[in-house]
Length: 158
Image (tube, rainbow, N blue to C red; front, side, top):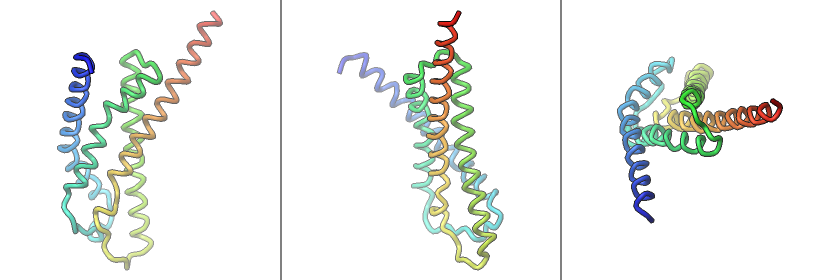
C-alpha cells in the first residue's frame, strides 16, 4: 500500500470516527425524542443499558460519509447542490422510517393496552433509522444516475 493510499485510509477512518462521535452525542437526543413521541411511555421498559443502542446509532451516523462517497463515485456527483440534495434525501428518509416505526409502536400499544411492557431494546429505532439512511442513499443514487443520463442525452441533441 503506497503512502497516498495509507493517507486516504487514515483520513477516511478519521472522518468515520468524527461522525461516529457526533452520532454518539446525538443519540441521547434521538432516544429522548423517540420516547417523547411514544404515547404510552409507561409501556416501555428499560431492562438493558443504552450502550449497544448508542453504538448502533453512532455507527449509522458514522457511515454517512461512506454512503456519500459511494453515491458520489457511482453517480459522478460534482456540485454542492447535489451534496445538499443527497443529505436531504438521505436524512429525510431516515427520519421518515424512524417516525414510521414510532407510529407502528403507538398503534400496537393502542390495539392491545393489556400487553406487558416492551423492552426499549426491542423497539429497534436505530435499525429503522439506519435502513432509512440506506434507502435514502439508494434513492439519491438512482435519481442522480437518471439526471446524469438525461443530461447526457440532451447534450447530444443540441
